[in-house]
Structure formats: C-alpha cells, structure tokens
Length: 420
Image (cartoon, rainbow, N blue to C red; front, side, top):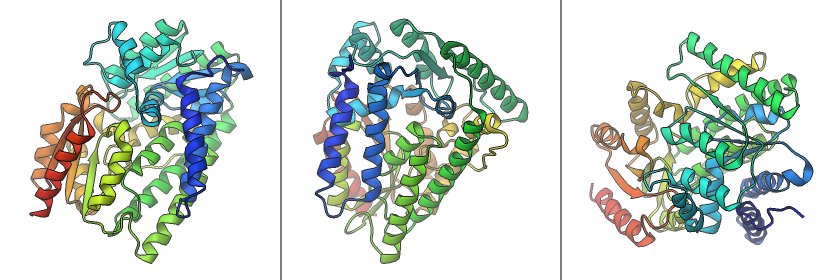
C-alpha cells in the first residue's frame, strides 16, 4: 500500500476515475474526452505508486522540457499542474495555501507555487528524487525550485534559458540541457536513451502539427471545440510532450472536430460570442464557465499564450537542439523576455483570424508577470475594436472571487458585446 493513499494525488486519481465512469453513461460523450481522463489517471497513478515501484521521480516546473525525463524512463511530476488539478478536482485548496502561508510565503506569491510548498510541507504530495526548474516564465518559477529542494531535501538543477533566440543563445541552451542530462544520469544512475529521445522529438513535432490543425478547425463559424477545451490542449502539452497517447488523443480530437465542421455543428447550440482567452481561468470555476458557455453561446476560440504555437519544426536527428528550439516555439514564450511586436502582433492576428468579438483577461492577482501586461494588451485590442473584460481572480484560491461576482461581470460584458 502506498504511503500517499490519502494524498492530493490519490484524490485526483479517484475523481478522474469517477468522471470516466460518469462519461460512460453519457451518449454524447467524446471518445477523446475518455482518452484525456484516462491519460490523467495513468499519469497521477504512476506518480502515486512511484515509491512502491522503485521509480525515480523528477519534479519539474512549468515550461520545463519533460521530454528528457520521459527519455530516461523517470516519473515526471509537473508541479504547477498538480496544484491546478487539486483545485480543479477537489474545489478546495485552503489547507495547502494556509500551510504555504505558515512557511512565510506572502499572499502576493503565485498560489500554484504557494500551494505546492504547503502541500509538500503537509506531506500531501510525494517528495521527488530531484527538482528541475528554469528561468521560464516568471520569478515565482525561478525561485520555486530552491524552496522545493529545501522542503524535500532533494538535489536540483536550474536551467538558465536565454531571453532571445539567436543561434548563439540556442546553443547556450543546448549546453544547459546537456549539463542537466549529466546531472540526472549522476543522481539516478540511469543513462539517457538518445534513440528514445529522438522518437519523442519526432512525436512532439507531430503533436504541434496536430494542435495547429485543430486551431484551423476552430476558426470555423460556429467553432466546434468546447468552451474550455483549450485546457485539455494545455494539459496535453504540459504532461505528455511527445508521448504516444498524446498523439492518439489529438488525432481522435481532430477527427471529431472535422466531423462537426462538416456537419455544421458548433460547440454550443447557438454560438453568439467568439472569445479570446488571455491566461488561466480559476480552476475551481471550470464547471461554471462551461454552463455560462452553454447559456450565453460564448466560446473561447483562441488563446494566444497557450495554444497558438510559433513557427518551426523539430528534427529527430538533432534531439537536444530540437528540445531547445521548441522552447522558443511555445505559445507562452511570447511572455518571456522583452515584450516586442511579435507578442502584440500575435494577439492582433488571433483576433482577426478567429473573428473574435471580445477577449477575457483572467488577471491572476498572484501573477505579476501577466498582470503587468493588462493595459498594453487592452490598448492593443481596443485599437482594432475588440473589447476586453478584465477578471480579477486567482487560478487556485477560492477566496479571491466568487461564482456570483464572475457571473455578474460576464453578464455585463455580454450585454456590452450584444449592444455593439
């Protein structure tokens, strides 16, 4: 019996299994949705049983190249996503947030990191064998690894990823990744399987291509992908980069959406508002957002910083360099480093290509990085006559905003869009 049977991980697994059982009774359930929850169940079950099975657990922060972890047959643990999933599937994170506060973490600290620290302090998460983190994408992430090393008494490795993507800086990052591989080989006693990494890179290239193809289908009026579907794409990218199951899921989803487009079916019975989503909505309100989508015919059709990949292809013949180049293709990479026209132009391009009526800016109060861009992004969208609703919220902490407050603001925003 695993020593973490009553942990947050165990709760996530049990809820995912419950959702899968419920979906089997729904005649209109998507096959891709069943795949998605099975993938989550498998991911967190593997983490839950890692100690029992003698596996090596490598925790890593967001935007970290988990391809390398998979290639070395280690068990990955995406730290921020684990906190998000706790909020999503339990609707309650007050215990781990309070524990984080008792460690001395201020309320201004990003709650996924504050909650993560609290969960480790409470023993609600299995301690990793190593922690891996990088300078992407914010100062919370850059400092989180040091704290986890201290709390879990484990070694760690920090990747210094340069801001810009000149050839010199990409080769510098390749060197950083090589050093990390040697670090993992030393700590785990395992060797990098370069052939396996090449296969993962090839599948990751296909994964990106499929997401681009899915985004093309989302341009259709009415759009076929459900309102919060982008969170599935985001999770696939974060937890399953270059994995066979991610390709199977995305190919199935693409087929489903293609059929809907051919039949003229949309994600909601009557599409009324096509929205752009900027940043992450509160996890504990996802069910509410789905209901609002159906009620008002409001659907997120594009997310510039989560699903809108940059140009480029990955080359399996140069796997480590491809991993480095991928970090500059990430949709979120536009938020890292100097804010330039590439970032602003991508917002404008998305608004125009996807026929956006309005944008919702989820202003996570603990995310200084995102909130610093509110005025800049709003001004950019206002210049092309796209209204923006700023929702002050928190991705994890329920005390910041309520369902009633969000409903009132959304209804006012929809009225504004209706009157245009």
